[in-house]
Amino acid sequence: MKRLFKIKEGWYASNETLKSERHSIINNAEIDSYMGTRDGQIIIANEKLLYASSEREGRAELLVHTALCTHPEPKRVLVVGGDGSEVAEVVRHGIQPDWLPFDAIQIIETFFPERSTLIDQARCIDAPAQSYDVIIVAELYGHCFDGLANYLSERGLATIKATSSLHEPVAAREELARTAEPFWIAMPFLPATPWARAMGEFYIFCSRHYHPTADLLLQRADFLEGVQVYTPELHVASFTLPRYLVTHFRGIAKN
Image 1 (cartoon, rainbow, N blue to C red):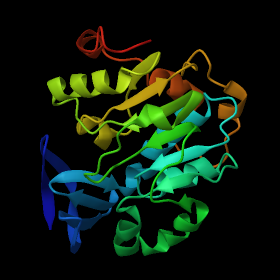
Image 2: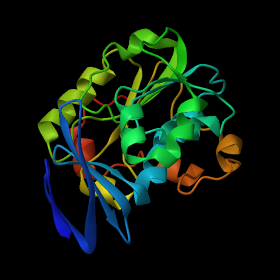
Image 3: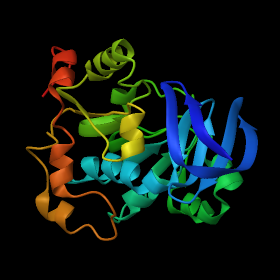
């Protein structure tokens, strides 16, 4: 039984009773799995919320479809990290992505064996090629992915799960500044799910040409099948920041 998680951003309380399921060490990370009646499976890695099954679709959908409903011809797509959820969302567009999984395959085999079929939906690679139309950077499990702009095509774009937190404002500002430097457009946007918001998660959209709201492909976004959270309205709304964040990122965000 466990009701309170110590995470890097502070204490996060759950109102339900959770059952401890499994403990494992992957890439020097202490990973614990719990099961709850409301939030489903919950994975904590090094005191950081890594995964909650109740929010899996919401996080992956916003990160993936924000990118793929903005670029008009996303033929070559790279997914970096993640737990396979992002790969599944890319496949909804009829695209088989390249996938740089880092520790994701081991995590899937250890904690989500029922989802191992996701591995076959992508081309698993050890190093990225060049000239991707879209790159989606999900959870990195402590790894680094540098030189993002070097792997994008002339009109390529990327969506990135920031490694810092809005609860760490200096680190968040510095991360956005580093990410934004080689791009014409670099905009933070916010998750739609409550756990992710409580953790201070934020995402970054960066592009050399296409704008995430001005170039939103409404017909593509409207007719996505099987999504649980993503809508065109949510796509646009996620870029609406509270005034304190607008002020905090002023001079760095490129709109």
